[in-house]
Image 1 (spheres, rainbow, N blue to C red):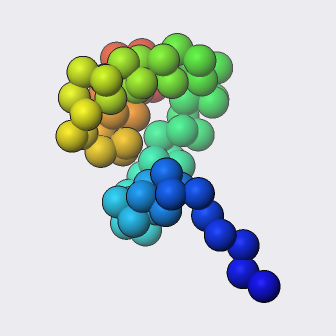
Image 2 (cartoon, rainbow, N blue to C red):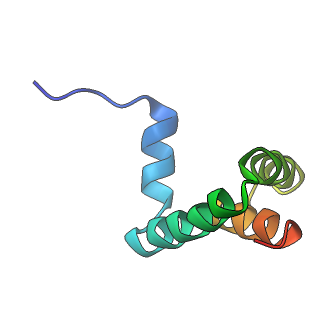
Image 3 (cartoon, rainbow, N blue to C red):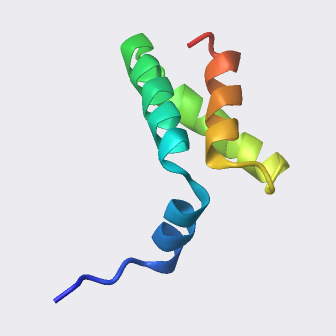
Length: 69
């Protein structure tokens, strides 16, 4: 039996290509290396609120750049 994903997970996975997921993961690993998970997450969420049409990857890229990751 196949487990059903919540709609927000389906939407997220449909919006992200495999290349974007790899880029997202690479950025996130740098964020972890710098120990700035909370700061970058907060900044990315603020970016998402300010620009709702931006992709999750773009918001993470902006936040990581803001924190020099």
